[in-house]
Length: 413
Image (cartoon, rainbow, N blue to C red; front, side, top):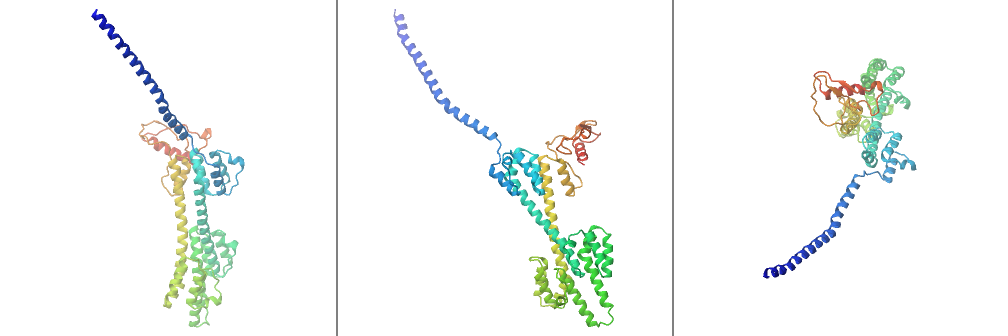
């Protein structure tokens, strides 16, 4: 009986334990229910941020308007509603600058993000490069025009604006018809049939040298002139040729000036900041008369050559930089192998290679391995059926990559 009472006495303890366990479970569930939203909130926020990050950025309306105005285009409402890729090609159709057109082509052939970046900043940079290129082209055209003007003034002809913009060969033909000096005519006939480099050399220096010889022949054949007169005439002829460098006609009242005044005429009529101006001022500061005469006889021509060389070298360096930039962008983006190949050739490369978009891979192949030709080896447009080489057999001993490169070059021509 004591055992029965002991068992009954223990039953309330068991019920209490069951109750306590149930209460604890309920508290745990309630706590978990309250904490669940706090955990789910960061998850939903991270998911929302990831979804927002996947949405590609687009150019805003002010950015599109600025890009269009940069090129002098007044965009229509329909044009402003175009997506970025279509907006790029719309501006490309109206653009005239080579840099703007080339950069637009690269962006259009790349991705939507590249088109957006082009609208935001790429078109501005490309337009600035076009303007700088126009200035360099204008300087090069000015150098060529002024060389013809100097040549005409040297031999006593009027520099006709329509004449000085002709090409070198046509200009030299006019010299053969209008020049009066025998040596100038003979030299012009030789230059007329020479190559382009010899023709430029004739215009820059050949005419002056031949004219100096004609002048000296006329002085030497004057039997009635005294030695003093001949020396004066030779000095005046040298002054006339010197002032012709700055396109001042060698009038009698100019060539009769003393040497220091001739230096002042040259300095006053030269381009500001030019080598001619600097050399004339330096010679004028000298108190030695021989320095004045040396500048008139040779110094002015050397300074002029330095000016011309500086302009042409600057333009050549800028052209090389532009070609290199186009080649690098096309090669890095894996786009337009034909464009990259043309840039390689323009840069003077002896081993042009088309660009490849695929990553590095093994180039070892066994003889007879079939090697696919790059799909964009000649253009971004599909090739005609007769020109679309799907696959070609790799010759024995040739690597797959080398064979693809040669095939791409052949089809890009």
